[in-house]
Length: 401
Image (cartoon, rainbow, N blue to C red):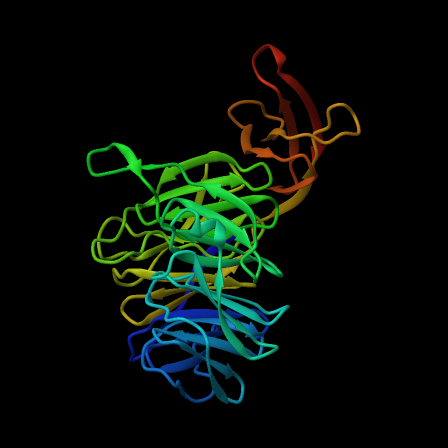
């Protein structure tokens, strides 16, 4: 994909969070006491302002594609029917303390369940069931055992969420809090450059093809092969903001590409970048600079449109254009017929030899077929590698993408 500026949407309010309705070309925005709907392409407001029950809203997520949960720093949640503006308030949830942070809540529209982080309670999440219309609290025992507070959350697939915490771990859970996977993020350097600081996870992106990207408030990006839990690479991309818990924001991925914000160690930032995390080294492609320097709370993408939520109460939208790329599946077998994990290197060979040839992808895949993006319309050399040292084995194939 590539990105280009579309428009700024200015709202006279202190904005807290934003979510997009993928089939409606629409974004849903909340401030402390109001919910707004805007057309992401035209920038026009859709319908009237919707006043919320609470005056301390912190986050918003979809429960179904027709309704949204608005979470606040109180023990109740608003369910809003977006087209009509009808709302109903429900109790049973816990207070959501942090707004203007991103990924504080996440909804599963397939099962009509939404979860939100409870940063003040060890191992806790708030839950709203859009079928039974009941609020409750979910305990994630794997995080309780770590004495960890939840810090961010995003939907992985229907029925499963990825949850970050303040003790350097990320877990995959269901809506009951059962844990299916757990990842440990490497320790980060403190002010004296000693590796003894547990990372605080602030951004999560899973691409659906076994790649997981994670960001922290200290400004590091980590990319894992999901099934094998192998850390493929990490790099610094921006430091913790001086006055908030914001680090580098991430959003839901599409074909291995996500968007991440620059928060470079100060209270201002004005850029969002396209990030392909299925390649090694990491490929940070197009960068979009906003008109003024503002901290970016959150970002998102739907179909051919993307957005960033900014500190100055603006939503900057951009056009997302697909690159000329193909998805090609790779599988490593050893012995034949038995899948195994290993390294895949794809080289684009324009038949001119060096320096025309270049590495398009260098990554680790698990013991299963894995779909990876590759430049379309080119001659590809694919090298599969297993083992190491004297036990290393390679297999080379050629094909057209």
